[in-house]
Image 1 (cartoon, rainbow, N blue to C red):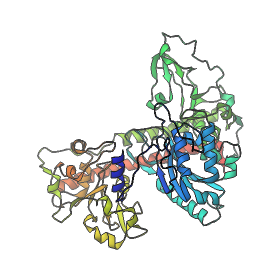
Image 2: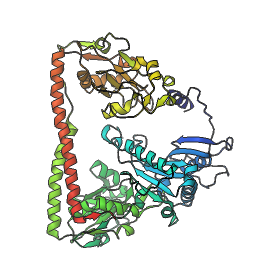
Image 3: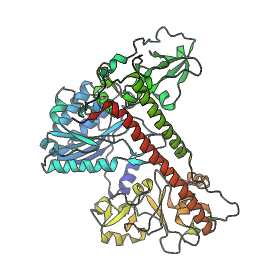
Image 4: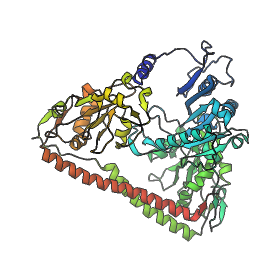
Length: 608
């Protein structure tokens, strides 16, 4: 790990990294040293055998995440700042140590909390996390704490973490910077209403003694002007819930719906003796709502079992069933924005690594209940919209641009396709040549993976000076260059457009300047998603925890090279297909808004 840390720091511009290896939690060796800036992603799990911390911690605990945060906060200088990634348990859990830690942070250190979506660390960990922003001087200066919520980070939340269009991180970064600037300048926060966040007075956080750091808990509940009766949802809790323990028949087969099973779309089929802890028998027409963080807003209506086995559900589901309400209507209500805002205020920490909604508190949430015929009309409307969405998603999921490879086409090395100009095929500068302290507010753009993965050359705001640009001119980009990601999401590509900001590539990219008489950039980009190339990239890439595609192995690719006119024809066809795909994405956005509108009509919510 020390070697990896040394290399990582060197690549990020720390020419003489200074790393000390010792047990922070059990050793007092460097206790009296302090730092101006701390950036950390400490271990989420305690090691086997537990932790045996020394006695100088202000919070007494054997939980590694508690001790690490305590250590880092206490080892900031008077004006020190920190950014710490923590598991969600730090935010919610009600154990004495967790509460003491949050109390200390709120009173003396914490200025902002950024909630991240569950799965950002997949495939290594599915634990939901947040970022704590500490600033000792600012925390003593302000009576507020800001909360921001990241729904999407530019990648899907599956194990493969494939790039997607939605990315809230740049917006949250802008809002956080604005909040910090206003607070440092002692400006009023009355008109500060960040779309992805909210500012909360410390008095509200302190009020009940929990020091809960879940931002949604403090969001103002909306006032309903619904013309329909507002009824506590607890009225629809199913009264005949039966525990399958101990009356479960050991030799009988059951379909078990757990949170993971819901994610896979099918239940586990188990013998009664294999099920274990108490479960709830569920019946067709029951509505199930997950009460566990981070798997909130998961709900489904129980259907008839295809196998005719009895169906049981884990106790992490709240179960509804009533003749007074249409199941599909109730499901649409419990996953709506209006219900979700109130639901999040019922979350409590109850041990372990997960937090849960309190069913008794959820029962008090009032929902609009129109007449059955109106419920059925809303359900029919939503089903119509959902069919369109499902069809559009199927088109997107199944589409892959395909190039029919003609066996008559010559296959050449990729280096035979580049122009004769110097530096036509080049990886970015070594880390020490492009350090963070070289960045300036405006100047020549630094192109990196954020542009390539998003497919947007205009994204990003990292720049270098004119002097630095000329020093690194061998790495400058030109119109028509193909940029290739080399690390992590390796093999992703982007064509530099005709109108672009002059700049250079960073160490995580390679640039390829093609000979236009041999291959056009758009065709090369299309080749990079074909199996004939993906298989080569997979074979040529290497790395430990992060896959790496070096410039040497990239130059080993061999590619089919049809005539340039044929390349243009193929690219035009693919562009027409992609226009249809983009139309399907717009269709999904449109009908998702229609669904929200259909549910919103019965709530008729306005902000207080």
